Each structure stands twice: as structure tokens, then as C-alpha cells.
Amino acid sequence: SHVVLILSGKGGVGKSTVAAQLCHTLAGQGYAVGLLDVDLCGPSAPRMVLGDGYAQQTIHKSGSGAWTPVYAKANLAVMSISFLLQEKDQAVVWRGPRKNALIQQFLTEVDWTGDTDGLDYLIVDTPPGTSDEHISTVQFLQKAGAISGAIVVTTPEEVSLSDVRKELSFCRKTKVPVLGVLENMGSY
Image 1 (cartoon, rainbow, N blue to C red):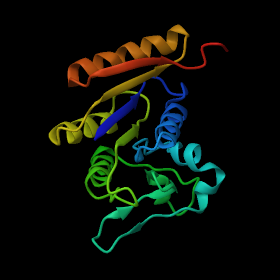
Image 2 (image 1 turned 60 degrees about the vertical axis):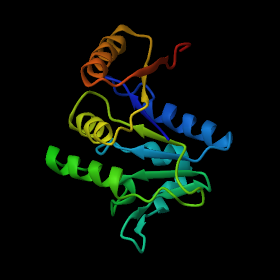
Image 3 (image 1 turned 45 degrees about the vertical axis):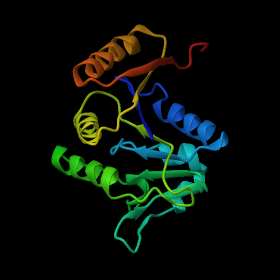
């Protein structure tokens, strides 16, 4: 029902942590939640949701040919390239077209129904910047009429705020509504 992108122009500001905490909070309130990790070169969302046990998790294709995500609990599922890697520390060295194809598969070929008959929320954890992964994700979701908006994550220092302003510009240019800006690690 709701697709929320977690964005930031800056790396290391806690996007994956915010995404994971949002998923746990929504799932704790009884919603069916999916976490889609499109940070293909630095997938950390599975560890944030599943803990260190994420490394033993793999995904498989269902009888219909769709991928089945990994479930942390009955109403909280995670999909990430990390479940497809043979070695968890393996680098993903891909160019744009291959990244775009995987993102399209994640958005069209994952069976999120599980025990909940679909999702109330799909939280999309993105890499830093405004690169291929962002453009592909936004274009595929807009084509489906499915973007609710974005939460933009920053930290208080100017170098982060400067990059986040670029992300806000990206949102304006791509017509992605900004649901809010979250300042992470503000007290440190």
C-alpha cells in the first residue's frame, strides 16, 4: 500500500539503520512490512534486520518462479542482493544495466505475500547519492504509480547537509514527495 524510499546524498549517515528501525516499528504495530535493499554494492539492511544470522539466509524461487524474501518474522520480510552472493564479503562489481535489471527483478519478481497476503509498507533502502540505483528505482515505481514518498536521512555536519540538499533536489526533479528529513546522530 505504501512505498517509502530511504534516501541520503551522503554515505554513513544511517540510512540502513533508519530503514531497519522503521521496519521493526511498523511490523511491531502489526503492519505487513517488506524491506528492499537496493544498495547493491553495500547491502547492509539484512544484517540490520536479521542480525548476524543473515549470513546463513538464502532466497529461493517459489513454484510460480518468483523469489521468496527472507522473513525475520511473519510480517517482516527482507530482500537483498546479499542473499544471492555465494560469499557474504563478495564485491558486487556491476555496471548500470546489470544493476537496473536486478532492481527491476526485485520490484517485479519478488513474492511479498507470505503469511500476510501482501504488504502494507515496502521500505526501500538506497545507496548514497543519486545514481543508477535511485533513478531506476524511482522510474520503475513511478511507472507502477507506487511511490508514497521519501525520508531523507542526514547527520548534522555541513558536509552531510550539503549532500542531502542535492538529494532533495533529486526528489524535486523526479517528483518524489519528501515525507521528512531525519537528522541522525544529532547528539554525538
